[in-house]
Amino acid sequence: MSNSGDEGLGYWLRWQVPVCALFFLLPAIVAIILIFKVKRAPLNAIDLWIPCWRRLHPVWLLVYRAFVFFLMSWMLLQLIADHGAFAFYFYTQWTFTLVVVYFALGTVISAHGCWMYSKYPFENAETGELLNTDLDESTTTITYNTNKISSTIKLQSHHEKEEIERRAGFWGYMMQTVYQTCAGAVMLTDIVFWGLIVPFLSNEHFSLNLLMGCMHSLNALFLLLDTSLNSLPFPWFRMAYFVLWSCLYVTFQWVLHACGFSWWPYPFLELSTPWAPVWYFCMALIHIPCYGLYSLIFKAKQLVFSRLFPHAYIRSH
Image (cartoon, rainbow, N blue to C red; front, side, top):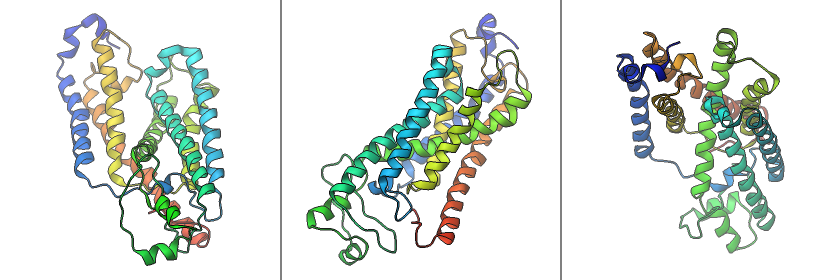
């Protein structure tokens, strides 16, 4: 492996560098355009904390998210204690930390939702469509069909109806964005780790241990279990945030190596080999099946659960 710290400027004047740069800069530009151009469907705040199972109390989703948050936080702290800040040299730890952030947001928002549920109890009707409470906006003006409201939600007062009718605010959209970024990132992390790194790239810099094995398994498992319980929608356009997340990590690595770091955490990021553009192209391309796989899992959840448990399962919007 060549040493970028020793070669200096010559390392960055190779023909591979601008070609590889295009393979993560162009997707980043397209992702940013999509984020600003695609019209977002309104997100109901109740979808952030209400389970997709009709008779499951929201407190169970809160308990699950809190448990996962504390367990994953403990695992991350163990890794930092062993390796210090060097632990964040790897994409795995970036993604693992992002999943921890999701469950932290989910815990706080679920706790708020349980408080709202205890304060304004309501009953879900046959359609399963619930109108929702805002988490941080004090005033929101939304017009609803009065007959539809009365047929889907039973409330005790007009004040309670106004509370339920509000939409998700900033932290609600932030939670959904982090959730879908994690969805693609955990698929990418675990597929690359178990399918490429463990069988082919193990060396003196990397050896599999129990903690690493758990980190590359539980991240996806916990997120999939949350998906089986929550009512969050899964729009395709939020793949843009997943792409930006990976582009941010590649940029981070390039900046470190421009400052003198010589060792790449993943050999396929190395720029000195003639095969570098092929690797970067494959890394850009693999984001589509990784995100698509999780999207298929979400659609399978909607289809299978609604058929097997038509009276218990509530389809997401």
